[in-house]
Each structure stands twice: as C-alpha cells, then as structure tokens.
Amino acid sequence: MSGWLSALFNILDPFCGPAGIFTWLGGSGLVSCGDTGWGDEIAFGVKVTISLALATLPVGLLIGFLIALAAQSQEKLLRLAAGIYTTIFRGLPELLTLFIVYYGAQMLIQSVLSFFGYDGRVEINAFVAGMVALAVVFSSYSSEVLLSAFRAIPRGQYEAGDALGLRRGKTMLLIVLPQLIRIALPGLTNLWLILLKDTSYVSVIGLADIVRQTGVAARVSKEAFFFYFLACLLYLILAMISSYGLGFIERWAKRSEVSR
Amino acid sequence: MSVTKEMIPPRPAPAVLHRPLTTAKVVGIGVLILWALLAMALISMVIEGWDPAKFERYGPRYLNGLWTTISLVGISIVLGAILSLPIAFARMAKNRVLNAIAYAYVYVFRSTPLLAQLFLIYYGLGSFRPQLESVGLWWFFREAWYCGLFSLTLNTAAYQAEILRGALQSVPVGQHEGAAALGISKRVAFWKIILPQALIVALRPYGNEIILMIKGSAVVAIVTVYDLMGETRYAFSRTFDYQTYLWAAIFYLTMVEALRHLWNFIERRLTRHLVR
Image (cartoon, rainbow over all chains, first blue to last red; front, top):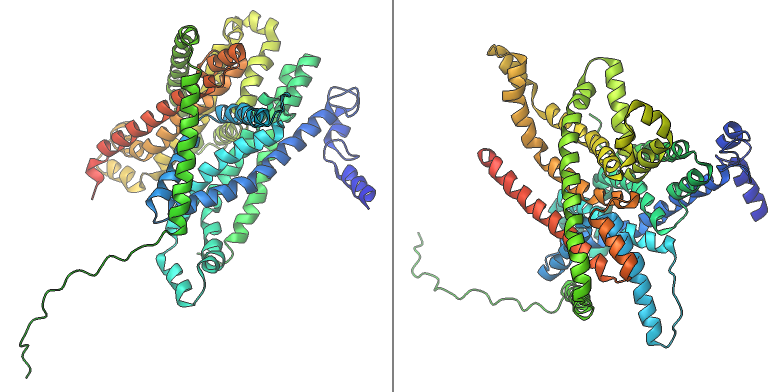
C-alpha cells in the first residue's frame, strides 16, 4: 500500500516526476534531477518550506485564538497578559524572534539537563525552533485579526445562545465560530501569505528550505543570479497557488451571504 | 383616584456581588506570574552576566548599529515614497500596458520574501561584475549597505504604492467634480484637495509600513551589513552570551513602541477636525 502510494506521489511530483518541470526543462543542466543538477535538492527545499508553513498554521491559529479570547475577556489581568504578549512579539523582528527561540530554547534545555547531571551538547531541531518562532509571530498577528472579528459579532448572538439554553462552549462552537471564520478570513489570508514569506528566515538557522537550497546551489555552481531568481520565482508561484486556493475558500465561506 | 401617600424610602445600593475566583482570573494571574518570572529571570541574567569589559567593547558598536538601522530605514522609506508615486499613478492609469507593468511590479515585490530579493540583488547581481564594471555601477553593488538600501527601497516602494493608491481611490469622486466645477486646474486640485484627504487615510498604513520596515531591515545583517542585528550577531559570535540578543530585543521594542505612540499622537492631532 505504502509502496503504491509513494509511487503515485513520484508520478505526481511537480518537480522531478515524469511530468515535473525540472525533468522537462532541466535537461541535463543546472536544475536537472539527480546527481548532476540541483533540481531534486531545490524540490526538497520547496517541500520543507511548504511543510513548515503548514505545520505552523494550526499552532499559530490556536494560540492566536486563545490570545484573542483573553484580549476580549472581562478580566483585566487576562487582558493585560495578552497585551504584553502581542506587544512584544509584534515589536520584535521575526529574525530576532527566531534567534531568541533557537538559542534560548537550546540554553534552557541545556541548563535543565545539567541540573539533572547531563553535560552533553544539546542541539535543538531547526524545524521545531522555526515552527515555534513563526507560530509565536503568527499568533500575535492573528489574535488582532480574530479580535476585530470578535468585535464585529453582535452581543445578541451570545444572548440568543443563552436563550436557547446552550452552554458557553456550545455557543462559541456552533454560533460564534462559524461567523468568526467568515469575518476573519480575508485578514487570515493575508497572514498566511506573510507566513509563507517569513519561512525564508529559517534558512539562517540552517534549515534546508528554498532559500538555503538555492543558496548552496548558487555558491557551488557560481550561478547566483539564476538560482536566487529561481527562489523568488518559486515563492511567487507558491503565493499564486495560495491566493487561488484561498479564493475558493473565501467564496465557500461567503456562500450563505446575500448576493448583492 | 389614588394618591401616593408616601414615598418609597431611600434604600442602600444593592450589595456588590461577591465574585468568586473565576477561571479567567486564575488564568490571568497565572500567565502574569509566568511573565513576571520570565522578566525576573532575564533581568537576573543581565545582572549576573554584567561585564564592564563587554559593555565597553560592544556598547558603542550597538549604538553604531542602531544608527545604521535608523538611517537605512529612514532613507529607504523616503526613496520608496518617491518611487511609489509613479508606480501608484501607473497602477491607476487607463493605459493597459502601464497598468500591467505596475501591477506586476507590486505583485512580485509583495509576494516574494525580502531575504530572497536581497540575495538576488547582492549575490545575484554581484555575479555580473564585469558588466557592472563596464557600466560603472560596480561601486554601488559591491557595497552590502547600498544593496541593502536598494532592496529595502524597491520592497517598500511596492507596499507604499498600494497604500497610496488605496488612499487616493478612497477620496470620493465628488471631490474631483467639485474642484472641476470651481474651475480649479487638475494639478492644483490634486495637491490642494485630493492629496491632503488621501494622506489622512494613508496615515495609519504608512505608520505600519515604517514599523514593518524597521523589523524587516534586520535581514540586511545576513549580507554582512552591521546594523543593530548585525552587531548583535557579531557580539554573539564573539562571546556566546545570550544577553546580546536581549539587548537587541530591547532596542527594537523601544524603537517600535516609540514610533507607535508617536504615530498615535500625530494621528490624533491631524484628525482633530474629523472628531465628532
């Protein structure tokens, strides 16, 4: 089963499969697949970039939702705590957040381990560090989007939920959340495109994403312009595909609205 | 006919409901304690690891880096604003070709990462050294600082063009028509009637763009420009002291927060006449 599945993926591979662009256009040149060209390495970078962005999205959305809930609660202390979070992480450069998470987590784990008597060198996974840093940044921005969406939902909706005898959680899940998604979707679409671009920063801590892989190719082959141009092109294509797909989702979310 | 014989005597206000410790309160206090612990840990780290020698060696470098960051952002914002004018007008032009070119420029620069653009300009154009030397532009593309400035300018011009276009199009058509009815020439109408109204709409997005640029300018550190981030990386690579990053965070946060408050003040001041 898994062999069959991987064979299917190999056939559908948009880069190095039988119908892949590098197979067709690369020939035996710089971007051909295999040992002579850089096609398969760059294809791997694209996969890393996409999977990093996709892995960050749910985490960031969940944290952002919780922060938005805290920011609109009636409890002053909770609002203050949420405000500190968004102020800090919206004010720091993404690159700095990444370094702080990467080296900070490394130091924290090392000091905890040395407390238990282990004195080895600890290296944390660049993918996880990148994911945490990007999720933190994404969540602080998405909390603002979700917060303004929360404010667009009238109080009557909550009161209707109370009148129907629904519990608070049920009101949130069945009444508020569906409307929230519809209102927040354009803002979240923007944030997704920003997230896709921000994944390029993880190349700095050594994760093999598009920028890293094309950078290695550029250094070895001395064709810097070509490979960095290719990197820009790949990001452009990813953005185009995303906005095309998100357009579908937006239309789907709006299907219940009155057409004017 | 009934007449009220006696008034209802005044009564004390209802007793304040004793609010028990709600979940929200517990969570709020918990998170705040977590923040306080984190802050204390960081402060104690700074105090414990305080080293006058390091401060003397890297302190001035940090200030230099801060100045590099500020000048880089300032110059690129101004140059980007100048460059964004023709792009915004091309974007609103009736000419299809002009429109398409401006749209493509904005789309490309907004949907590719700044890091990739910077690499393309610094390393990519750097590989055309003989050609650039023959044109006499090599001195520009040789310097990382100029390349950083160039890519930041191109990037912010795309964003600013969109801000400007949105703001100009938000001015109602009636304003153009009113100016025409008064016999005011198009040029004067643009400078004296349309632009002032558009800039008020654009004020907040411009503030956000400057903040994004301050944050985005950190990437130039990767192509060896010693801005605030570059000095931080330099200091960290020499000392392996985590404090270096904390100081950078303090500098960046201060810059962004100061700008945010300044911008709020400017906006309140400039929109006094719009407050109802």
